[in-house]
Image 1 (spheres, rainbow, N blue to C red):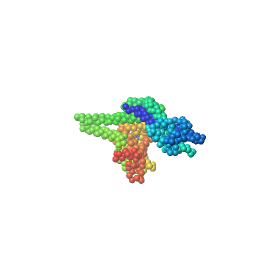
Image 2 (spheres, protein in one colour; image 1 turned 90 degrees about the vertical axis):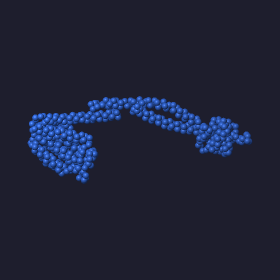
Image 3 (cartoon, rainbow, N blue to C red; image 1 turned 30 degrees about the vertical axis):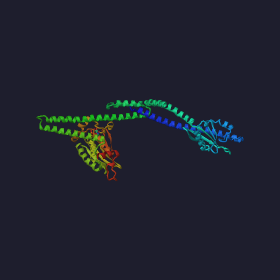
Image 4 (cartoon, rainbow, N blue to C red; image 1 turned 90 degrees about the horizontal axis):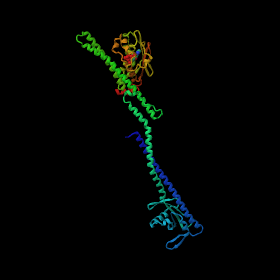
Length: 509
Ligand code: ADP
């Protein structure tokens, strides 16, 4: 199974092998260079020693060569030869013709071919103080040549030593490393596996906890906070915050579904009773007509509710239809004011509009009318007879504010935080029969507590907002603030809105 733990261990092992490999190569290279350098020093010391033996003899006025055999030619004197035999490596003393005046004991053990090859290399070796590596049979030689400064029969003294000893030492080191490395690797991988397991144990705990939260009902559970301030604590906090949001959304969804079902249940029951009454034999035609009228009314109410629910569902999914165009608000507000006056008269209220300024916004006129009418009908609905409702449309530079002020029942401070929630009404039981009783038009659009939620969405979808100020028993003021369309732009459309909204509207177009 490919777990994070085994993956981490594998990555660690690969990194370790690569590091060990690089380390071994570097060590091998450094060790080899050092060994060769050491050998070079040793070979030069030997060459200098051989040269000083020759020179000392010359300086002492002793002969360095003699001719014992006329066929063989001159050779080093026996005294010098005895001294030179003390040097263990290949030592050659050559004359100016390249002839060997002295061949050391080690060199004399070589075959004729090998000796010839050694002599050839000795003739070519530089006397500048540089040692050279020359191939020699199956091995290599490090060769140092020195030339006497004085006029002499001897042209050069050459010492050569096999590099095998230096390379053997390096080879031993690499061999030791090769033996130790797998052992080291095994111990390290074992250690890494245990450490990774320990480090990841809290993640296992988090996985088990999250797995236990299988449905919406377990969302109240929270992961225990670590408190170490590390990544795991951040993960726990993030997951806890996410679950809190999910819990809130689930609760809102459940409440919304329950509220929607409840709101549909009543009109459906009324509808059923009306239809049953209309179908009862021997019912007078007038009574049947009343039952059918009521059924029609409830159907309209249900259609309204379904329409509102659909609008909110689309708004939630950001899949709504907003037909944006430049909207002269003054004309729109005058139009809704006329409706407000008619509705106000029916409710015994005074409706006025003291301030209205000409201003254009980029918006959907149908939706804006719906928003303004909702605020006006609410103001009229929640203001007792004799009260007043005042509309104003004021421009403030880049924004415009449409306000609806009433002298009605007002909203308590505690309720103010809820009025934009879906299906929320200050007094569910009382609001319909009490306040709509004297206003037959209200009965057609009885409150579901969705109007302000939809109004808030409309305002925000236009890049604006909606706010409220109210005091219980003193009346309320609802204000919609919208951004003014830029007069410099002819196409006061989609681009006028904040980015998110523009996308939404563009998608719906
Ligand atoms: P509804 O259709 O019930 O009026 P809204 O969403 O429009 O739904 O309003 C939600 C609640 O806010 C109302 O039920 C009412 O309690 C309160 N409300 C709204 N407008 C006013 C107002 N002008 N005066 C007093 N209360 C108001």
